[in-house]
Length: 281
Ligand code: GDP
Image 1: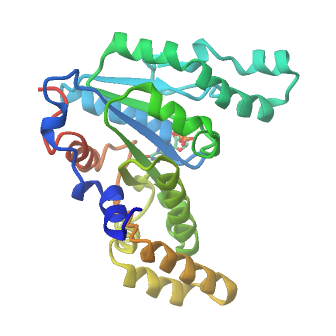
Image 2: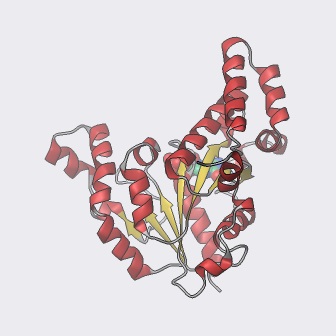
C-alpha cells in the first residue's frame, strides 16, 4: 500500500531521483513520454527539447506514436506512421476517423516488438516519446501503459503538460490537476509537470499559476475570489482531494517557441534519471 509520503516522492522527481549507480555500466537509455491534452504543446515540445538536448551534446532520439498526425515540426527517428496508417485502418475495418484512431492506439501494442527493436538499434541515451494528440488514446486505454512499459525496460518518466493559457483560470487549473493525477495513477512513474507555452502569458500570470502549484493557500484564495457557487465548491473540494492524497504537481514553466525554461526542465529530468549527471558523458 502506497503511503502518502511515497506518493508525494513518486510524483515529485526532485525528491525521488533514481540513484546514479542504477544506470552505470549498462546501455544508458532513458525514456520520457510527453503527455497532455490535445493542443497542449506535446509535439512542439518534443521537437524543441530534442533540439535543445542535441545542442548540449546529449545522445537523443525521438519517436512519434501518433498515427493520425498529418504534419510534424520535426523528423522523428522512429515514426509509427511508417507501420500504421489511419486511412488503411479506416478502410480495412470500415471505421470512421475517430474509430480508426482508437483502433490504432491498440494496434500500436501489436507493433511493440518491432518498435523496441528499432529503439535498440538506435540505442540513444534519452528517447523522447511524442504521444497521440488526444491524450485519452494513450493514457486511458489499456494499451498506453503497456506500450510505455514495453518500449524499453530502462528508467522512464512522464512530462505532463499544463497548457498555460487554459490554466490561467483556477477552475481549469484544478481540472488539469485532476487529469495529471489520473495520468500518474495510470502509469505510476515519476512525472514532471510542465507549464507549456509561457511565451503567450505575462510573467505575472505565469508566476500566479506556478504559485498555485507550489503553495496550496494561493490556489485556495484564487478559488474563493474568482469562482462562485457550484464551481467554487467543486474546485475547492477537488483541490483538497489531491492534497489529501499527498500528490503535488510543481510546475516547470516552458516555452517550446523561445526555449525559455529548457534548462530547468532538463535539470528535473536529470535528477530523476541520473541523480543530476548528464545522460551522455
Ligand atoms: P499537441 O497536440 O499537444 O501535440 O500540441 P502541438 O505541439 O501540436 O501544439 C498545438 C499548437 O500550439 C500549435 O499551433 C503549436 O505551434 C502551438 N504551440 C506549442 N507549443 C507552443 C509554445 O511554447 N508557444 C506558443 N506560442 N505556441 C505553442
